[in-house]
Structure formats: C-alpha cells, structure tokens
Image (cartoon, rainbow, N blue to C red):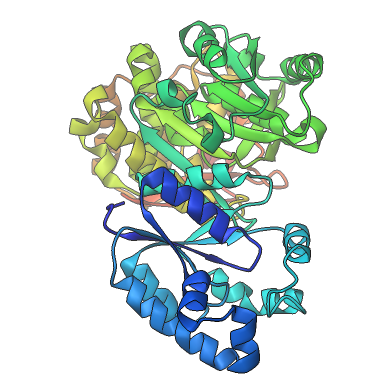
Length: 505
C-alpha cells in the first residue's frame, strides 16, 4: 500500500475504531484523525448536543463535508463515525482515497462497550440500527473481526495489510492477513504484541523443522513452549493428535493459548485440527515451511487427520488468526520438497492463473512472487466457497487420483508427486471427455518433466480405483472428479463409469 494513501477505519459504534486508529497511527508514524472528535471541535459542542440542538440531518451534513475534505488529503489514519460511510457515495469517496476497513465485533462485545458509553446519541435501540446497517458494512473492501483480539493485535493486522500482506475474508464477517516476505521469522519476537504471540504460545513442529526454526523461535517469544511430533504423513493420525492434547494439558494450555503450526502441510493440518478441537477451539497461527504448504494447505481453513481408510477423513474448518510465510525458509527445503510444492503451483496455474506456468518463476529468486501469485488463487476460490460446496472443489484437480496413490503405497509416494501424477491423469480424462486436446495434455506433461515431477506410476488399476472410491469427495458411491474444461478453467464431473476412470489408470 502506498504510504500516501489514507487508511480509513469504519464500522458500528463500539467496535474500537478510535482506539485501534490511535495505535495504528503511532505504529505507522501517521497523523490520526477522529472524525467525530473533529466535528465536535469545529462545532463547539458534543455530538449529543449537535443531535439535540440541530438534529441528525445537520450532523450528517457536517459528516459528508468532512468525508470529502479528508479524501483529498494523504497519509492519514481516519476513524469515521459509525454512519459516515453507509451512503454509497461516501464509501466510494473514501475507497478512492485509500484502504477502507470495517471493524466488526460480536453483539456481546458491542453491548458491553456501549454500556460504558451510554451517552452515544444512537445507543438506544442499537441492535435494530446494527441490523439496518449490516448490508452497507458488508460492502466495505476489508472486514476485520475484532472479537477476541487486543487493539494492538488489530492494529498489527491492519499494518500488515498496509505493508502489502494478502487478505482472506472468512464467513464470520472477518478475515486474516497472509504475510509473505523474507526474514519474517527473525522479526516475530519484536512484533509479538501485534501478531497475537505475546501471551502463552505453543509451537507445534516436527523433528525435522524443530532444530532449524522452532527451537529458536520458542526461545525468543515471551512465553512459548514447543511440542515436537514425528515427521511424515504416516503420523498424521488420531494417535499423534491425542499426544498433542496430552502435552497441551501438561503445559497448562487454556482458551487463551495460541497454537502455532510451524512446518509443512502435515503439521498445518494436524495442529490446525488440534486448535479447532482443544477446549472447543483456541487461536491458530499458520507458519508454513514448505512450498506446498505455503501455496495450498496453510490458507483456507481446512484442517484434519487421516484414517487408515483414507486421507483427511476426520477434520474441521478452522480459520487461522494469521498466516506468516517467510520465503527464506525455502533455502533449507530439500529439492524434492520444492518439486512437490511446484505440483500445487502448477495446479493453481492450470485452474485459474496460467501465468504461474512461466518457467522463469520456478526458482528461489522469484519465490516471493511465485508464492503470492499461487496464494491469491487459493484466496479467490475459498472466499467464494469457504465450505467446499461449489467451486472450491476445483482446488482438488488431480487430488482424488493422488490421494489414492498415497493410500495404496502407504504414503511411500510424497503428496506432491502423487498430485503431479493425478494432474496428468485428470488431464487425460479431460481429453477423453472431449474438453481439452492432446496439445494441452502434452504441455502439462512437459511442465512436469521440466520441474522433475513424475507423470505416471505402476499401480494395479483395480486397487487404484478402489482407493479412489473411498475418497470423501465422492457422493453416495458416485464418482466426483475435477477436470479441465480449458487452460485456466476447471469443472466437476459426476457419475463417470468405472470403465471411463480406469481407462486413464
């Protein structure tokens, strides 16, 4: 975000606009403007007095004039009144001047805060007013959920957006920042307050990543403990989860504890499931350390563990408080794991953003750009379909084939390699169904070869198909697979016959 643009905080009364704005202005070294306070100063009377002596219409006129005035200035942090941007023209005026964020809070929080400020002129009947304004607030470009967060944490979240963090909106009217950059792990302790890591933190990692990053992180945070699990998909199960529960209890973890998932996709899925279920839910921060987990599993809120019958059959939706992606950690990633992550990047390119298929991006020097582009695909999909009832299934291109490979081989084949093979199988199925031509199939094969990913595997088709048929995405025994309609567009096809599927196995 350009420093010259304004940061505008709006939302209903009692959501913390003034408090957060003051902290944010200090953090960013910007001038803070509280619109209500400025109107009072210029009018020489309080807002309740303006309402009483001149009426609400006069107050709204003063508010409109101030909106136009502030929109012409630069570099401000502005806290608006709760009704200032309800009008479409006022909202668009502020959107043109910078970044507009709507602060949201639970009704319980608003009720408690308004009880302390009963002088607000519209506090009586506030629930009806909130309902009347809900649709207007929903139109604000950014939605920030404040419940359960300190003002310092909220300001830190907004500051991250100002520095260029990505942002994923969630179904509860909030969202979370996805911070992508270099050297972020080294700065976590200094920014612990704003990242929600100043209280009790438990870092969950594995025996490979812990010596590299987790142990030093725990030493630098104010109040942190470490739980180390065994490495690998074979350990993403309920036995490991129970062990994590036991360790959390020993460490005195409670509802105020924040769980940090520091590792690859297995750690993110498993620790996320623990965060969703321990004491009915505690805060979660995802810090992915593999390319695969950066571009895929750390974003979107799907967490879970495996059963012997299949992958991720036990799970939940758990949105993280934030996702912190330090691309410097990719320098310690084995080349085989980089290639596995590239399988998910290729998938994102095939279903939505073909620019990711440019070989010039496939290196560590361009890792930040590559990750940001791939993550944006995930954000765009999950915001539209957070609970996988529609187009989010497109993110599973190649995955039903790939999950079956993992199951049949008892996870001897890494997830990324299995997905790469699955993408090739899905492409051939797409061709057989008449959606794409041989040329695109050959192009996909060439991409996999360039990256160094496998394109086939010697498996018994009957065993492969049987493993696919237990996939959780199939419905009532009917096949449900993702195919390519064309480059950059995917679709779900249902009810294909066993013969049609086995023809590509």
